[in-house]
Length: 367
Image 1 (cartoon, rainbow, N blue to C red):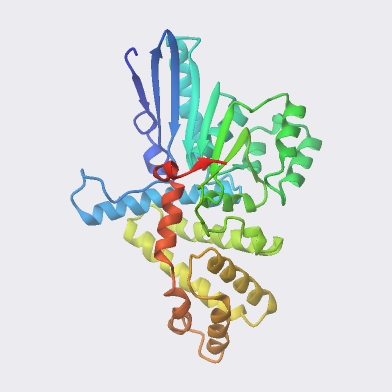
Image 2 (image 1 turned 90 degrees about the horizontal axis):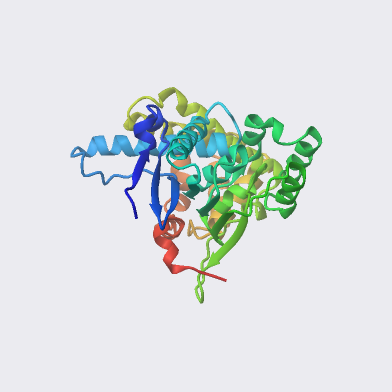
């Protein structure tokens, strides 16, 4: 293997670290074939940076880094807003920069896109937008957002095809017809993108929301002779209008936090708690309506079935009924719901996160 050239997005792009975007490219020659691997990092954040001695500074960096990724995950990828998609813009700029430079070194270099979680979303999205890769591999990739694709590449399809695609992805976001239609109408083929998901991975929840889909081949991995109770299909519990209300809740959170996103991590965390308390007040203000009761009951049942909480939806409803006769204060809300909130299953939460990460992949085999 000849000398390896490394391109770091956070060195090349001044705004990359501020927005949370992170990617590294490697160029080398092996057996007379030049290759370039561009690896897009997923949602990240760590408290274990040995370069920073101060716990407060490590916490601040962790919160700010995680917030930037989740701002993109929720507002751009989940909802499809284009005013918070700086990470996608930087991913395109970085990819173009790398491709331009390595092609000058060797015009025949093969370029591969790699990504886990959020990084997998970038691999698929960039291939749809710009076709920079000869091939790509993703693990537990977050989906493509159709609204983003149309915003940046309205010329990819004609109006009639866009209408069909939006209709196809409105509910069944894993319909094979989507990719087939793209291939027929655009002449573009995406079999070169190979995607693998754990069959009940955390990112599968995203595919329950409108206008999310994937391109390329799909391989689902599962553990043999092991029961994994996490439920990834949230559509089994929430109706279309409830899915919209659920996504709007998270969209409002991002909007609320935007005013403090340039402050330190402590202030961001405090604002997050404040928003949560306000949301609880609103829930209790509306809980007498059948719609609000059904939404909370359905979501609580989902969390219980997914083993995220040990309490049952029946107990939650009993707490609601008891709390309705008391003053609607945040303290009363928390007191009334404490049996449910305190029943969080930490072991299951940690397991879901662990098996989403690359470290957990070794426990799964193709079925």
